[in-house]
Image (cartoon, rainbow, N blue to C red; front, side, top):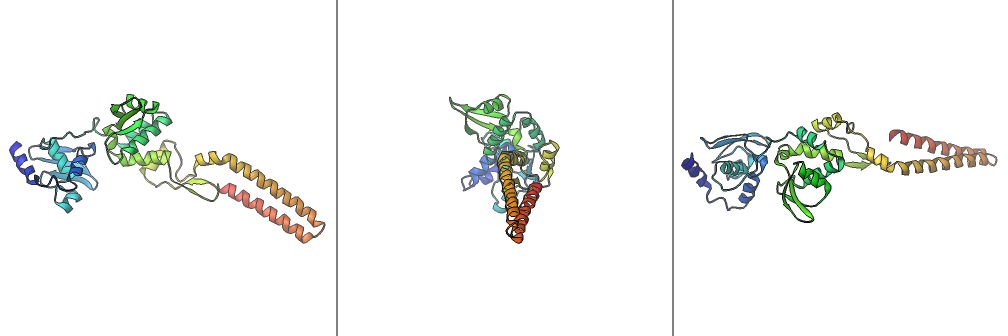
Length: 280
């Protein structure tokens, strides 16, 4: 394989310094591009890509990037690294790469503050597997000691860490799960903040299965945080309506029509308020 492989790869010798190639080499080192299988005899590999399984060789790849540019893509660089043709170290899954459900189950075993700390670190490395510098905290210490974060450097005040490679295999659904759980998108419905309807997909189904929340629910946390304000406002509104009714009764002694108008208006306000509370 040696000389033949070198000969094939040397075809691209003049291309590696072109714009964009160093970025493709860097991305190819990520565990995300770990080969599903390698045929070293034939200098080829199969890699999971955005559009399915790619057949990768040292001269071509099925991915759209190679089809458009006809230059080495990240998959081809990764194959060259695996074959020892590029002197770089690539990351690989230690545990074969966790499915997103396995990753969720692992993280969900921790207290809420630790889970949030993990998700923030995971999001910080979502587009790049390079370690991130974070101020030290008890939550990060727990994640490091339990092996969910890899510590690459430490100072008196900071950790430089990244999630373990296995969490990057199905990162999109891991992101969807924890973003919907901790930071769901909301909008104001005229009364309070409510959660936007969750997409009807397997991530939402898994959230429901784990007892987080039913689909398309109003934001319970917003209701709790605003409950005291809403309750206070409702009491004031009710007192005002009762006062209007009393004033209407008094006005009936002067003008029955005016008194009835005031009473009807007060009753209308009370019914409208009850309907809003029922809808919430």
